[in-house]
Length: 279
Image 1: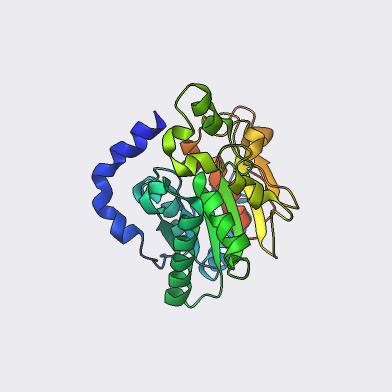
Image 2: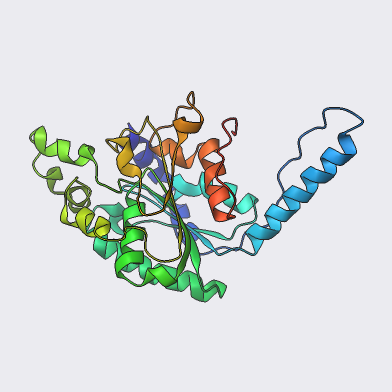
C-alpha cells in the first residue's frame, strides 16, 4: 500500500526539479490561541506573540534544513513536512535519493555529500540540519560518519529509519524472494548487514551533532520498532510513549503533526515534549 501511494505521486514528478533546489523560506508566525477570559487576554496574547516571534527568529537564523527522502520517496511526498518547516521560517530543500534509493547506500551518501556542499555554498551556511525519513537516515549517517559530514551537520533527526536494520528486509529471503529480490539498498538494510554493522560499530552518533530519532509502534517497515533508535546519547522518541492513542504509520511520520513538533523542537534546540494534539 505504501509503495502504491508513493508511486501514484509520480504523476507530479515535474515538480521534482524545483523541489531539489535549495530555497529560502518565507517567514510566517503560527496562529495564536484565543484567550480564555477577557481579563487574561492581553497577557496571553502578548506571551503567545512573543513566543511565536522568538521561534520564528530562531528558525530564520538557523542552519538550512535538508529533508532527505527514503526508498521510492519522490520529492513531492516530502513537500508536506517541508511546507511546515518553511511556514515556521526555516530555509528548506528536499533531497531525493539517486535512483529512488534502490542502489548502494554508500553511493547515495557520496551523492548526498555533493548536495550538502551545494546547499552550503548557495546559502553561505557552514552547517546544515538534516531531517531524514526511512533509508534517508542511513544515507545521512554514512555521510556524517565516513564522508566528512561530522563537521558540516548541526542537527540530525530521523523518522522511521532502520538504524539497526529491519526484519522487513530479511523476510523477503524467508518467503523465497532471494536476498531482497536483488535490491542492493534492501540488502544493506537487513539486520546484520555489513553496512548496518559499520554504521553502528564504535560511536554511532559522532561529533557535536544533536542526534534524535522518532519511531512509531505502527511502522509497517521497521521491525522491531526499537531498531529505529540510536545509542550513544541520542534523543530517541517513541510517539506512543508520549501519546498512547496516536496512530502513525511509516509514511505517516512525515505527515503527522505530533511528529513535526518533535522535529521543530530538535531543530530549535528546545526540550523535546511532543504535542499529542497537534494536527
